[in-house]
Amino acid sequence: MASPRPDRDPERPVYVISVAATLVSAHPRTLRIYEDEGLLCPARTPTNIRLYSENDIRRILWIRHLTRERGVNLAGIRILFELEERLGARILEALYAEGTGDAESIRQPQAVPTAIPDPATDPASTPQPTTTRDRSTADR
Image 1 (spheres, rainbow, N blue to C red):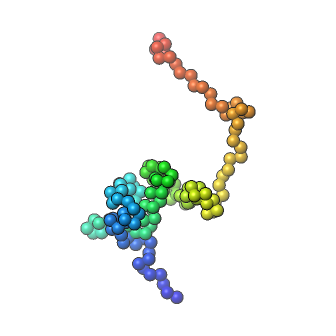
Image 2 (cartoon, rainbow, N blue to C red):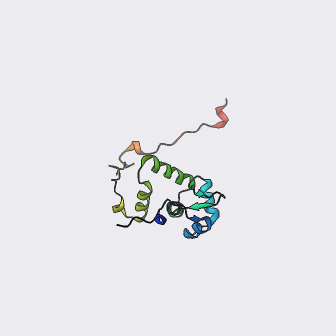
Image 3 (cartoon, rainbow, N blue to C red):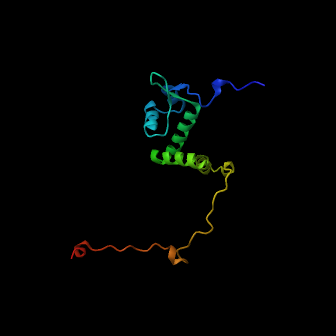
């Protein structure tokens, strides 16, 4: 049985920034911004050239999907990545499946609310008006 080829290792950094940017249809400056925001950490050569792995390319594609298709800003994406790492949950896959309508691809059951309160029958769910103090009389 043949062993896997070492050049197919998804962790191995092989793409310089211009090639990585071309693969994901982005400008190299965009990849630098993602790195500055803490969303990516490409490997560096001894001469400080950034090298991206297949996993980095996948991560960039997730970032682009979340910003373009889902409207998430970079700070939100950082939080999603941190949550996914901490919880070990597949948050991004769930978001992708939700966006594409492919709920079958999510392996973990989703929590479904049992009932949505009706404001007509449940007065507690109706937002109450807030009162504000008149500034002209507040200091007297």
